[in-house]
Image (cartoon, rainbow, N blue to C red; front, top):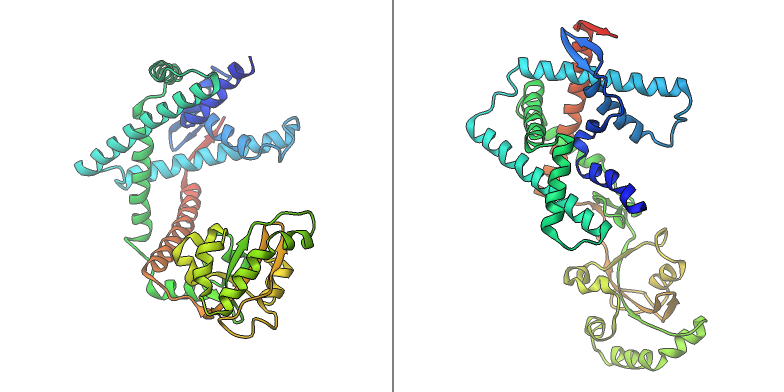
Length: 361
């Protein structure tokens, strides 16, 4: 029974563009007129629902004052969007050539079909059905019941493409200058937390070492027991290193740290600093121990929950700014352009609001 009750929410999450089709009120009352154009409840309720979902848990839904604030916020946003839409049409932003219109049609149709497929997959997962054809047919029927069609998705792509034209009108083809890109590049400084969280790294401080390791799986409840469980392997590795075999060769044979399955990572290793905050203290201490006096040295074994580690001092990491590649240049240019678009849009909304004739009912 619980699965049946969950279906409407699941389906609507896949077809959320027009969830207002299930609005509680069937009274499509007039909410406002904007420069003579009507804003009806059916359009307004989409904004209201979005704000209610966005702020869910952050406000008391039973508090009339807070509820009124959310309603006013939604109405203001709906009116502002109408002003922008009117401005876009007046500036010819929807005047597409044949090639662009064809692209819009194709993208919208594909998005619609993908949404139906996703709904069918959700249905199969929730109800345990295996008949793909039946679920696809049900998804299509549900979309029709909501009044959702491919044209709705096409309209979204048409609006997105018109917005691109609108930003061009507001800003020009590309107002981002090379000086602005260079300035943004020089002011982006990465810290260690960024390095290991997948964020862009623009600058590396002095003092980092590139560290490789051999990680051995170990058994036992104590550090002593874990060391004892791999002592024979540690002795064999030590003998071969002392005999002149390369650490990288022994890594290929003994290491179980999957990070080093990437050949490129073998050339950079883990980035460790004396003041590192993302590494265990034992790992840092071993990386900067007396045995690690220079590149080419290896550490005494250390124990962690992952196993037993032998670290290798590959080299000192190059410090300073990372070279600005074409990819970094393009990413910065895009980010700056997006920021300028948002600023210009906010300014334009203020201009349009000041001159608009708006009546709220």
